[in-house]
Figure 1: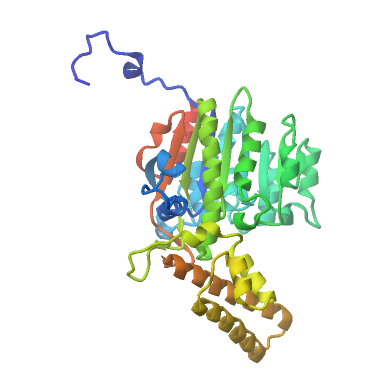
Figure 2: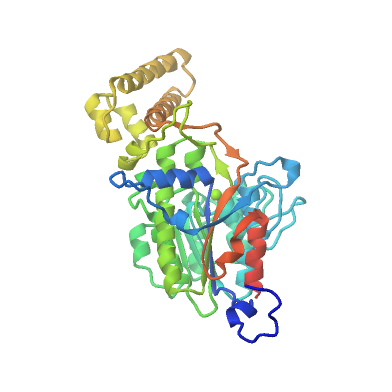
Length: 446
Ligand code: MG
Ligand code: ZN
């Protein structure tokens, strides 16, 4: 408290010695695209309307700071997921599209690689394909995030760097020219391709689990709406060992909801991430030598809670969604658009205006398709009708909730930082995304 008391001997060890032991386990959690508006939206989405209070969420309980996200400044202030994940994984700014490489395309060591070289176990759990930009930036080095097959190949060819891989991506790992799943099995991995099989895996072998062709279905449409938290639980159990572990968890598809300007899908993904953090909250209580750091790589969509000058954001209809707007659109494509059908699909009653808009969009789009008659007619018909109906469904939901959007891409807003457990205070206040990696390297090297 007071200065100049060095001669006194009553100083407690906690005050005198900043000797904080390094965490045994480090769990890095990335909400892809999760700018501050998403965690705010999630609070109101989860609010219990029967109480006068707006309840806090798991995000509110663990907020510690903010982070900037800009890539190497030759490339403007708006980052993509590859440059930002490379900043979070290597502590270096680079160009958009770069996977674990610097501006000159030289490989940079990642925190996951450092953890492995120190004898820790490592893992990744994502809802995208496991070779997508964010996980790839922890596991691979490639000049472009678009080189999906090369990145997948490198997971074997550059040496196996992780003990647990969970997410999507059959398309890239089971190919005509190469079956990487078999190669992982040959290297001693247990392979699972269903959530049920994941539940019953034993922890004596490393684990490779792919649950869909590319990304997993939207949380709202998946057989397990909380698949990220299920995968995270399985991963922590598999990774526990004497020397500790580094685990990357990514809620990959918040960003995809943002790109699609789809607030319902985004809230579904946020709910899966929140369940994951609630699990980690209890995990840290029983494993206090674990650090959990949560942030986003950037914000997406320029989402606005309250649009058109109207002072209202009304998430009510989002709380009762039974499926994603994309799957509602698919159903509207193949069914007659009636009041009964739309009530069943949206799980709320559409107004006459909303209903007639959907009917008009469908009939107008079908007419237009006939006029423009393109080569692969059947295919283009399906794509453009589905797309038009998806846009119309999202419009209904944006109208009901008064949600606005300013972009189909990323924005430069700073993102929130959350931390739990051992050494969490290191992440307080404003920091750059590269600082997060620097702090993790410091803790690994302790
Ligand atoms: Mg990502
Ligand atoms: Zn994105």
